[in-house]
Length: 130
Length: 127
Image (cartoon, rainbow over the protein chains, first blue to last red):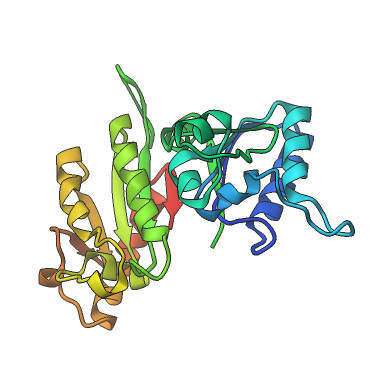
């Protein structure tokens, strides 16, 4: 089956990102397709490469990046939500006159249309959050 | 449920709004999805449950909160052909609200009817 996945909460504070990650990994292992993972609300914070969790804890951001590299996942961070929360790639940083960018490897920033499109293209859209 | 038209697939999208408008950002960011999504010509409905019914209450004044009052934006939904707005009857009553207290025309429905509406959807986004 072709799944779309939505992550609505940030890393560590809430289990949404962990559960979504486990779901995606399990779905891929069973031979399903992940059309896209869309990060919205505080979920965009899953895409910052500046997180430094304690060494004995899981690295949620790195885990997503690695999974994306392994399976060519499309990890999309909502631009409107990202701008509010200070998450940007190089071109967004330049466009907004900011002195740094922080988007992690394997993620891309795009619009809410990508969420709607995932709803249209996927056979099931699975939302992780409260 | 899903239909095929000349323009492509048309799915039934339901946006479920469950939270009060200003305590968290979910209500505002839900409305942003609805407005962007309107360009995709899908079959869109909105549902308001629980404290979500407060999003539609008339006479919101957010000046002292220093937060933008986004309730007038709901009136733009009709311009985007988003006219199927369902409000949970019990949620309204429990909060002392009537249909006349809301900023846009809605269909007030029972929980049973709401369940049927949800059952008939292809995609449900819950905020």
